[in-house]
Image 1 (cartoon, rainbow, N blue to C red):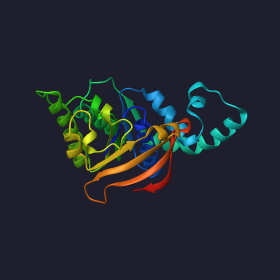
Image 2 (cartoon, rainbow, N blue to C red):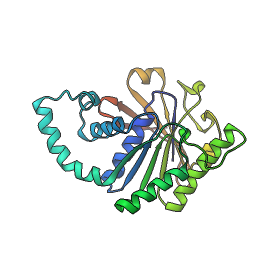
Image 3 (cartoon, rainbow, N blue to C red):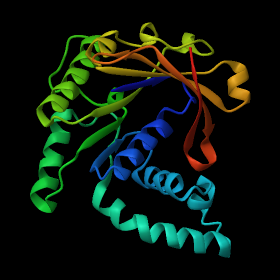
Length: 239
């Protein structure tokens, strides 16, 4: 599953919402981040669950009322999150899917923990398992590695990716990949996030299932982007 959009449309927040939905479905979620730190990402998960603004979590600006509500919610969620969620940071361009598989095997041996879902934010920051002759082939190999990982483990693998800059302000489609069309070819599901300038001003975005290998494609919804609480509120289906 690939989530594509231009800068600032909410790709990382979308990946966190997918992770939260997995946790609520009692799935073990492995979330790998490369630009953001693990602490930042965990704070965003807490914000999404608590429904308190991110800066409250980040800067510890708590009122007594917030603390009471947070304590009740966190007691319910902390045990599940500790069991179900692993957020792991690695520097950009230092690991491959094979390295990540080794880490997951270590977790399985040491903790008996096996992922039901893997999220990469983003595969664009991962090395190919074998050196390639060009950047395009490196991207193709990395996405092929992730697809193979999904097939072997029989679990969903999600990655965010950038659309090309010229797609900003337009409807993002499969043709909007910034480096390699192989990303689209290898993805079973492609979710695109698009914004007009008016939607940017209104903190809204269009989510489209631009490709769905086994089910209906070209399905879209209009959503509110509630960045303060790291949430996405679906408003209506669009054509």
